[in-house]
Length: 133
Image 1: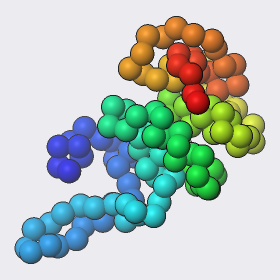
Image 2 (image 1 turned 135 degrees about the horizontal axis):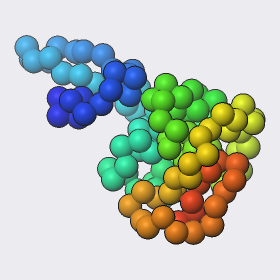
Image 3 (image 1 turned 90 degrees about the vertical axis):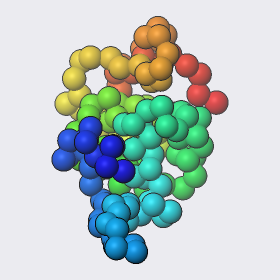
């Protein structure tokens, strides 16, 4: 956990608390098993640890989209907000325009591990560089 914390800004590292286990201080997430919204946002921010398909499957389960968007805003990374908004729309959850207004004009790839080629989504400013099933 310490290695990850070294690379995160304070605004990106939240909802964690310290817990003593056998005289060792560990940092664990408060909602590790119950807070799907935080896990979804973390998967879109820390790409490469969870596949996009797994993130979409989690989005298809019942989630509180406002809570997920609030987490994305707290991380303060437009790429995460854009990916989350686009993915929510693909699973049938339409976010109010307040979430897409004010986004930068820069387009980001849906899947950052793939080339930046594909159709462009003008609302969320996403390059749709892979198919979501």
